[in-house]
Length: 104
Picture 1 (cartoon, rainbow, N blue to C red):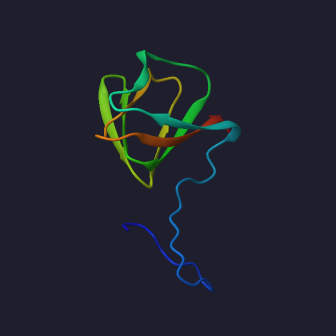
Picture 2 (picture 1 turned 60 degrees about the vertical axis):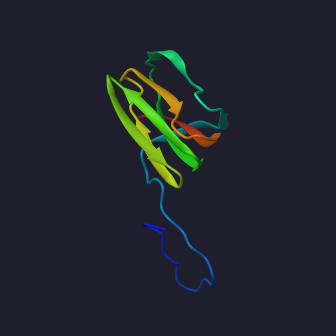
C-alpha cells in the first residue's frame, strides 16, 4: 500500500492524502465506468478543473494527446483548459470520484 501511513493515535488504520488546497470545490460525483467506457469521445475543455480519484480499477486520462494512467487509490488533477477525456483502463469496471474545482 504505497504512500499509506497510520496517523497518530489510530489503530489498524491506513490513510493516504489524495489532494491538498487547490481551489474551491464546485461539486463532486461518483462514476461507474464499464469496460471500454469513458468519454467524452471528443476531448473537451471548460473553465473548471477536475480532481479524479480512482477507488476501483484504473483510469486513463487523455490530455492534449498524452496519456496518464491513474491506478486504484491514486488521484490526478486535470486543468480544465487542456483538452481531456477519461477512459476505463482496466479489464473490469472502474469506479472513480470526480471533484470539480475552480481556480484559487
